[in-house]
Image 1 (spheres, helix red, strand yellow):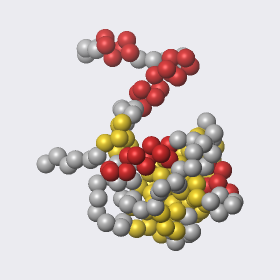
Image 2 (cartoon, rainbow, N blue to C red; image 1 turned 90 degrees about the horizontal axis):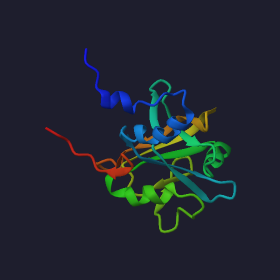
Image 3 (cartoon, rainbow, N blue to C red; image 1 turned 60 degrees about the vertical axis):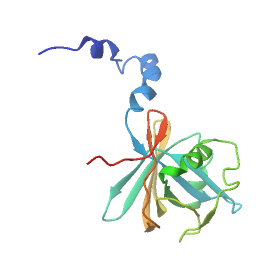
Image 4 (cartoon, rainbow, N blue to C red; image 1 turned 30 degrees about the horizontal axis):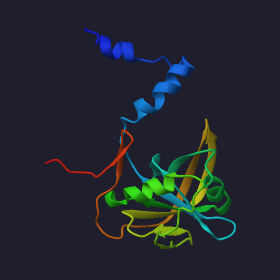
Length: 177
């Protein structure tokens, strides 16, 4: 068996917190993910939302989906308090929208077109798909919360290509024959 010394020398031990924190994001950036914006309504009735790259399906029976949000998120408390949210699966041409909703401390809905979902929260116009949910579980894990949603309704408005995030850059998805 041969050992690749380049790979071995680049390995960071998980017992070295400083090394892990320096390399963690870089290593995980090599994993591609879809991009969604989770939306809800705050206690005043104003729309709230955040870009999420850690969204997944969990169960078909019952239909459950989940995402992770940083505990310092300003939108997360609104999702939990409202108990309802919409997962807006972004289309490849919505990369500017993804960047806008990734910023904190701004009015993310300025110049954004949306309509109420079946549960009353915002569905963003042009999304690749929508999944309307009720909060099923909120579980703190590390410095994030896992939010599991029970799917109440979903829609795929029109065929489009999804937005993908890889190595800190947004991409479209091309099929290879």
